[in-house]
Length: 431
Image (cartoon, rainbow, N blue to C red; front, side, top):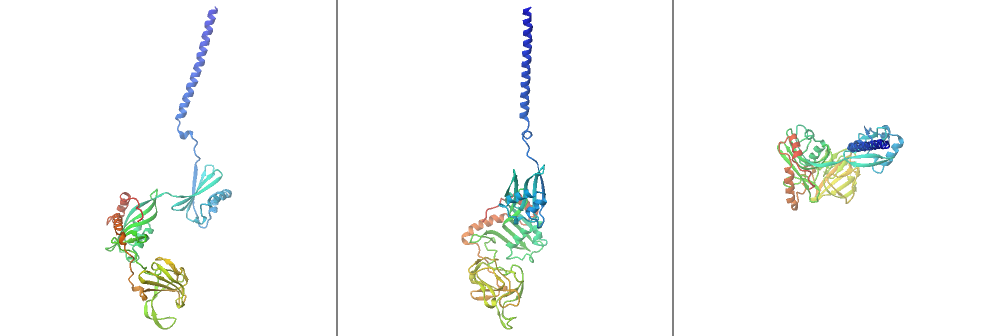
């Protein structure tokens, strides 16, 4: 009997032990499965997500200050004050201009997180919240410099032709400046004229042209007469344009001492009736009638050898140039240079006036060579210096390279664009 009881209790204990062991094994297996599933879940599900940012943008109206614009966009005065304080060291508020864009980013709950103001095509102001403070920084928009081939045909004006080639009026102005010594682009272009050029462009990541760089080479076919230009450097190292045979496109003197056309009210004469003195006497210059305050420019590089008041000439500037030339600018209302100052061609040296012996506002301009006054209206403008002999080998290499980048004659706008996209090298180094 006792033996039978022992067998029964042993069986019960064994069953209980097996049940407990099975329970532990089942739990262990379950925990391992859970661990395996957890490690297989994608990281983005486990990792806490960054808060969503909702953006809104507004164009700056005219006459709205920065702080006022922030208030108009729903930013409270205290936050506005913190933002303004954070930007003072990096941003000049005078650069806050109408027409530019201001973008703000808020959390889903409405908390202000970011601001972005487009300063210009190349820079923007970035303001980011860091806890309770704001950090401001002016950042540059990434861009690259590329070399582009452009070709076009004239049906109306040069501006229209350049626009049809997919470019902006700025490039037309640049092209006109290069050939302005030989062509008047208001009167000389003819229907059917063509142009070809290679220009550096600063380009954004989306392919949009940000700005133009150097025009490396250009050609304009004016009714069968070909004008070509190659970018090189003059003897002083400054950029300059030359014909392929090394002659400077720039002339030593401008066509006029006034930047914009003006009526000639009195010509060079050895026997002119003076309107004030009521007598005949020589007038050894050219009078340009222009409104009071019209800018007067030096027709060439030189050195100021007189700047001041001189009798009936009124306020006078006299400039000494190369090859024995001196120029006189008389009756000025204001003088903007001083004795001994070096000036460059096209530099503003004074303003039109009627000081001295004058009946009305005008500029009396005179040019003298080796002590003899000359008729500027009939004077052939002397060219600038050609490529220096010491630079000739370098120039020929640059010329061959840059002219080879031009689209072939007769290239269409589409063909030029295709050539620029696939065949031209990256922007070349400055010459």
